Amino acid sequence: SASLGPVPHTTASTGSRPVVGFDPHAPTAMIVASSPASPASVRANPTLRGARTHRRSASLLPSASSSFVARRRRPAVRRRGVAVVVHSAASATHALGVDVGTQGTKAILYDLSSKAVAGKGSCSYGLMPQPAGRPNAAEQDPSTWLEGVRVAVKAALEEAGLEPSAIAAVGVSGQQHGMVALDAAGEVIRPAKLWCDVESAKEAKELGAHFGWAMQAGFTSSKVLWMKRNEPDDWARTEHIVLPHDWINYKLTGEIATDPGDASGIGVLDLTTRSFREDLCEFVDPKFRRVLPDVVDPGRGVLGTVTAEASSGWLEGLIPAGAIVSVGSGDNMMSALGAGCVDPGDLVVSLGTSGTVFGYSSTPVIDATGAVAPFCDATGGYLPLLCTMNCTKVVEEPLLWYGRDHGQMVELAAAVPPGCDGVRFLPYITGERTPNWPDATGAIVGIRPGALANPGVAYRAAMEGATYSLLAGAERMSELGMPAPAEVKAVGGGSESPLWRQILADAFDVPVRRLRESESAALGASMQAAAAAEGVDVRGYVRANPGIS
Image (cartoon, rainbow, N blue to C red; front, side):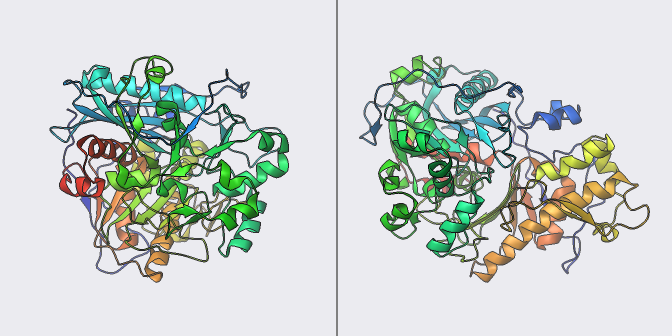
């Protein structure tokens, strides 16, 4: 098993809440301020290669000539059915969790006996080149995700020294909101429009006005309306709209289904009944409700099993036929499981490509401003969440400006006082989801003569700027009745930075705990799979096995 090590805590540096703080005793030899899946981070700082969480990894970065190519047609798909044969070999001793993200796919093998991580793997990739004249597009070919799963799972098996037969169950986590359009035969029609694609900002504003809340362009229903208007031929062919984790589950099991957590990111789910609202779907298009997947209660546990066709086909034997496939969910819902966020008062901050802050709630939390997303979780509860589009990438910008790596920047930032002597980095370099400013740009303000001569000022200001956005989300949650947290659990690649954890502690004015396993979404997926394999409730399973988080 991989050594999990101690769980470090970071506390606020003073009793009052300063603007932001710094721990002078924090080690500065190593910092990861971007997603571990980002190859740019490792190239910028060669020292990270040996300390990288995923020791087995590969890259699938698209070339400038990459294009979407339709693949051979498959037999007609089926909607959710009843799980059949279950893989029951005596050697099946581990649960597999895969997290299909924007920058890469991560895999974790979780030992069902020791409740420890036995092996990890990853595969990095990027977005497709933007189509000419469409600067707000962010798309991926879903086939990239299949290759990501293969590479990451193979690496995890190699690191653990296990054969595929050791896998008893699989859980899938996927980037939220992505629109995957399928035809009647289950073939992908067009590239997936991702959460960070803001071409549908106009449609989101229109839908929000009708639905009664300020919808952001990330929500899937706005992307569907955009496709209907801009690609009518593709919409006419569409017979299924699924999310990334749904599509991976379909490729594993042949079942078309979703769960309330991921489904709540579409924008037309009734949070009380956990079913799609016919009137909202009708406003998007008369056929929209028909093409959406069935919503499976997470309490069901098992969605289906890996088909022989999938095992011997695209999986290349890396996952055995008959292995259980749990219901799965979106990456934030799975991250909550991995972080142990299953009770009121739990609060998690994720520092990755996007920044998120979320907490558990037993009742729906509705924010008419749209700042706090009205999500369900993966246990039958709710997961109010604020998401920003700009987090670790903002911190990488000063590396490009000054030609420095993370280690050098941390040393320089150590001498910069909290608040950067008034320099503020507005981090909206790719537009922004929260606040809902899809056309915004970044800016550095408060500059005086010589203020940016020290690269550490820009570097620290970038961390502070990303942190302020997340702090605003936590404060908005408090306004909506969420209990104040006693601590913050930090996950994601940025959480590996002692400097950034100290900034979080001082800004939130509570202790910050870094989880032993920073890839909490893949871990949560493996724990959901483990609960399904053991036939127990996932919330109870997470509570009973808190050691890893």
